[in-house]
Structure formats: structure tokens, C-alpha cells
Amino acid sequence: MNLSWLQIEEYLQKDDRCVFPIGSTEQHAYLRLSTDSVLAERISSDAAAPLGVPVFPVLNYGHTPLFMDFPGTVSLRKDTLWNVVKDVIESLSHHGFRKILIVNGHGGNMFLSEYITGWLAANPNMNIKFHNWWRAASTWKIVNEIDPVASHASWMENFLWTRLQNASQPQAQKPMVDLNALKNASPQEARKLLVDGNYGGYYQRSDEDMQRIWNTAVAETRELIENNW
Image (cartoon, rainbow, N blue to C red; front, side):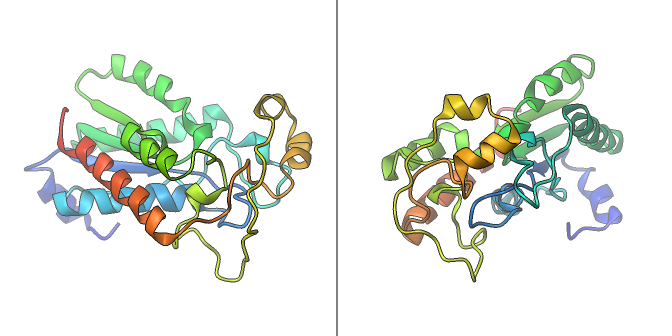
């Protein structure tokens, strides 16, 4: 975050909006472990920049116990994650932020939406939106137009900024994993089912396709920052 406390104090005299991205550190097949965090933070920054709304540093860890048999994955317990998120939003509230957009990049964090709804009931002066950027209507529509076989660690998360330079992507379309079996799997069973970590689908599509998704996701996120508070 490239702002000083003095600049935040000045900003709060005229506006009370901010963005708080959250992600995870977990296996993404041949992509970066930080893929979810990178995407949440970059979408937040690209969406907020023209509006002059501050974006706070991304929370890099999430709830991802299923992937704990893949080295490098870090998982927080639900209560631990919620307590961190709650401390962040209460800190922001203390300083005068009243409208917070949480941009979430990780499916395992989605439970936070219910926790936040409960918190808001006790804090009626606050307004918080919880935005799962990849599941938002317009963005998901573009994903399905390009290729409906899209999943965790597949092409739909393979952007220039999540790709590793020295990692070659398989060319074949991977068959989709049995999602029912995966849902009830232990971490050890999940690794056996997933092998490399991709749930199913191609590993990479054209940069033109990915730019279409990105442009839509940024516009959809900007709309949430701007309107209907």
C-alpha cells in the first residue's frame, strides 16, 4: 500500500470507502502458490485505482485444509481466519472507514460471508460487501463462453501474473475430477485424486481470452466500489 497515515487521514475527510483483498497460499498445479492472493490484490488495485479508493494489503493465507498434503500449502482454521478478518475490519472501522469491499480470491474463504453478516447485525453503521470475483455473474459468463470446463488450477487462473516462467504447462485437457469424491476426501486422498492439483480442463488458454476475463472482472469489481452502498 503506497500511502502514508497522513494521506489516509486526509482521504477519510472526503470518503469512507476502501478495499480489502483476501486470498490463500495453496497448491495451484503449475501456477504460483500465491495465485489466489495475487489475483484478488491485482483485481482490487486495477478496479480501485481510477476511483482513488485505497486498497489495503492482501491477506495471503486462507482456509484450505483439503490441500494440506501438497507441500507449500498453508491453511488457517476457520476461527483463526475469521478473527484476523474481524480485527482488520474493526481496525478500519475505528479509523472511519464505513464502506468496505472485501475481494475474495479463494473458495475456502467463502464461509466468511455468513460471519460478516452476523457481525454487521451488531455494527449497523458499517456496510461491507463480500465479493468472490471469479464467481460474479458477468465474469463467470465470460469464462463459460470461452470454455465451460474451467476449475481450480486450470486455465481460468492462468494469467501472465500467476504463471511461473520455468514451469511448462501440459497441453492436453485434463478430465474433471469426481467432485463428490473430492468433497469427502482426506488431504491424502485429495492428492491421489488430483495428482498435479488441477481439478480438470486445459491448463492454459490464449492471453486474449484471459484479457477478456480480466477486463470483465475489473469492471464488475469497480461497479461494486462505486455504487449501491
